Length: 249
Image (tube, helix red, strand yellow):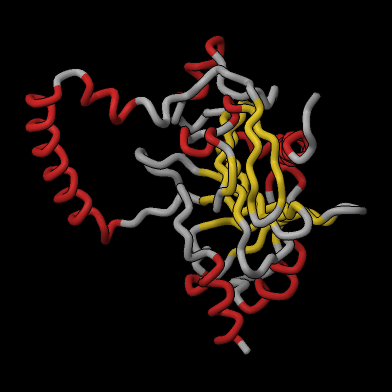
């Protein structure tokens, strides 16, 4: 039983999260960067300033709030351009994922007045990142916690911060360096995974999942410094996603 569930668990989290560090790939990444720099120098000599435009244009933030219609696994989403992180998705049509960002607490998309805050990568950053995908198997937070996690709990339930409860996970779970924080409300189960230790290069993030029926998983992440507002953050994400599932007139 543990082996089969462990496989399901690890395959679900096989996609790298922004909080995960992949040190084994650093030598290969460094080599690729050096090669790219060499090619870039040659191209710069040949193409001049247009070379910079090749890299900068597609994914530069936009202040446009024009709606883009995106089709993910048969579900339609209507997202303003300034909420979409990547230029390719701003073209609309069928996609395999949707990458969104918003600034807490307004949940605004990118705009000139708050541009510096959107670019903030520090531990006090108020940017919330949301990724929509359509995995083959959807696990709701309560299902994951009660059906899979008990095989990997390491230690008893403990009081957590800000009214949440805490469980630690063993190393084979893939979440050994995270706190699993949760709260059972009268109508909803809240589940957060927060990186326990921050580094100089990677501030601590928390992430949580929502299901957009019938097939789409919305995973959102935010700085652990915002955890004190966990209930409001969750509601803000839900309200934003609700806007994106209906045409805005």
